[in-house]
Amino acid sequence: MKPNDLLTRLLALSAMLCLAACAQLDSVPVQHQHVNPEAATGYQQREKVTAPSAMVASANPLATQAGYDILRQGGNAVDAAIAMQLVLGLVEPQSSGIGGGGFILAFNPEMGLDTIDGRETAPSAVNADLFSDANGQPMDFWDAVNSGQSVGVPGLVAAMALAHQRQGRLAWETLFEPAIRLANDGFEVSPRLHQLLSLEEELAQQPAARRYFFNAQGQPWPVGHRLRNPQLAQVYQTLAKQGARAFYEGPIAEQMVTAVRSHSRPGQLSIADLKGYKAVLRDPLCTDYRMYVMCGMGPPSAGSLAVMQMLALLQHTPIARHEPTSAVAIHYFSEAARLAFADRDAYVADPSAMTISANWLLDANYIKQRAALIRPDQSLGTAQPGQPEAVLTRHYAEPAPEIPATTHSVAVDEYGGMVSMTTSVESAFGSKIFTQGFLLNNQLTDFSFSSMAPDGQPVRNQVAPTKRPRSSMAPMMVFENEQPVIAVGSPGGSAIILYVAKTLLGVLDWNLDIQQAISLPNYGSRNQATELEEGQGLTQQADVLRSMGHDVIEVSFPSGIQGIERRNGQWVGGADPRREGKVMGY
Image 1 (cartoon, rainbow, N blue to C red):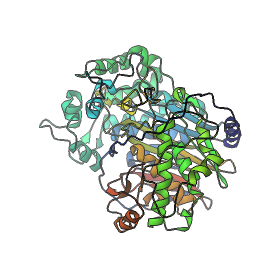
Image 2: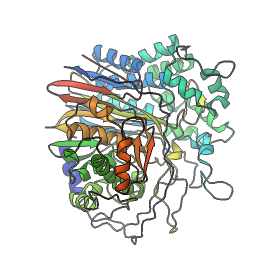
Image 3: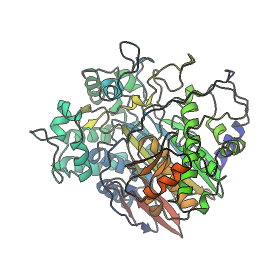
């Protein structure tokens, strides 16, 4: 489906009458602590990369090389993205892998834009009390994370297979070759992997993980140590030859279930859950943005929707006339973010649990109404959810302590194709359950830990069988004259929304190239304090912001943005200086 055709359909949907007839309730904001999913591990200045025909970018040079090699073999953007992800699961296991899930945006001129939901699902045996203790209270978050209870049915393999089935060019088996070679021959432990392992305690308590990630003395392997993973190589060889179903049925599936159920805090994952998993081809979520059409993943992702809301709100402010790191720009950006996060927490969940269309939150009249709340010299503090026109529904805020360890890859090919893919195992190293050479996710902790709101009504983002938890992942594309001109995304938990919005604003409104926009200091609000990236020259803005009513804190804010844009007839690529990413093109 073409982006503009989809936009017409979505605008038509927004005119429909809401079916919900619940009485409107006052919003009850819930405060929770925002935690970075992965620790900051340094900052290295990056320069933009340009190329005329094709380009790839990922969070690790070995993965980028794999994608580049696939393009050079005649593969397209989908092929390259899959090859990069398979390598990332090996060399960056703290962030993603086949034990997790993700969202894929894939465009080619023949198929149009596919948005593929590979989000994990809850096992069929769970109920709303999954994360309640013996007294019916929400259990400790980290006890939930580091357990079999947190493991959802992994969706990444099915999502990649669906993308390849629809748009792939090379043979499926070919895409596994770089990762299999690296797994067998070994790769050097990177500074980032070593540092994150050094911060881990729970991972070393899991025998299988301890044997792989640590030496005999229990110390993480040093930087430069050649780490081999023959178990993962064997799994990849099986999937390459037998296809994606070999992950969801047979010995690989059986060992995953055994690992989850034999944990000291066992989960309820079953063979039937794995066998029944399906990646979902969903309609893209698109909106006009000046001369462009901006598209992303719709619910259960709240990320792209919130980014679109923020940018739409900011069109009603003078932010484009101010320097990106000025106090005024930070103020407007943070206020738009507060409003978007308020709506995100109130309305977005698995599509089966939502009572409104995501597009209602992008309606021009609604955006104008919300933008009127932004004042030029005074912060909102904590924003309340809005009330889209003709919608009568409760809007209790339902934040979940979302801290996914995540990665993002982008690719463009010489055939007119583009991919933007965000993948995750949730927290750093996921559930810490290591089986067959890969880690299993803890994505079920993205559900709300409380199943009931203070008014006695069930929360939308509560745990339920086969349901997909809300996510902030925001792989996005921007189109001009129906041709893709930007692909971008980021890891970072709920802060993904801020990172992606900042980058798009930098390119589209501040006329920065993609690398300059990625390298801008991170800042914004998740409807709590206004957060400023420490060490990036923003301290001087803090007092001005406080005088405007902002509660300001400085944090590490380690994003991992990868992006590609079309500029002056060339592809321009950028990699986040806060990670080990690399861009390559030809």
